[in-house]
Image 1 (cartoon, helix red, strand yellow):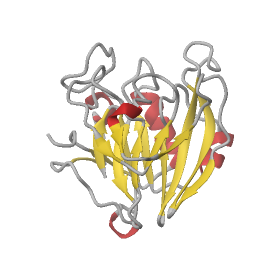
Image 2 (tube, rainbow, N blue to C red):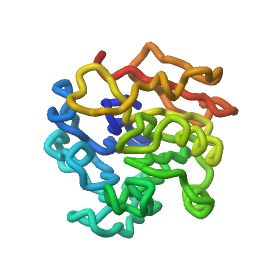
Image 3 (cartoon, rainbow, N blue to C red):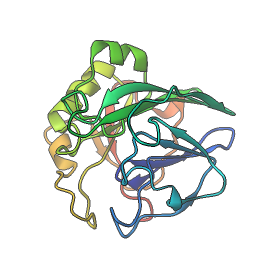
Image 4 (spheres, rainbow, N blue to C red):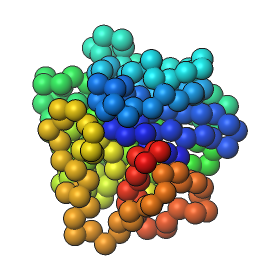
Length: 222
């Protein structure tokens, strides 16, 4: 797996399915990468999460919302060894009245269960946590302002208890006009944090921590 920046991750399943989450374009960061993929997930229809022009090939597109962003899609799809479904959530803490809807993607990739929270804007309910279920890997926004912030993110980590947490949607050098905080506000004072010096990690059930750890990934190619 690689972190492409913002809320975008790139990984390949055991059967070779290349997956991209929430692709973004150069309006977010000039260093935005173009990648080839077989599958793209889009948590919501905002310009910094649905930049399909940055993905080559002929990928399947799994959209969490309808194209106008007004309603959730009933995603329940399979591509080889990748299965996915959504859990309906909101982009804010006011039932979507400020920023609309958001879809959490739960992905079963080989023998791993992963969740990408998109631009989640509120602490999850108990019912939403139950729908997400057991997790090996959690991709969670931590930068605040447009999404949950560090404190809310930790509440969700404690609720879901994933083996691995991958923070995303935080400020990095080169981002343009995003009033969000850096990852340090999320990791400050936490003992279970590893800053990895490599931009690609091999995720397998037998190499994940037994107790929750946070792995901070550098931008791919940096």
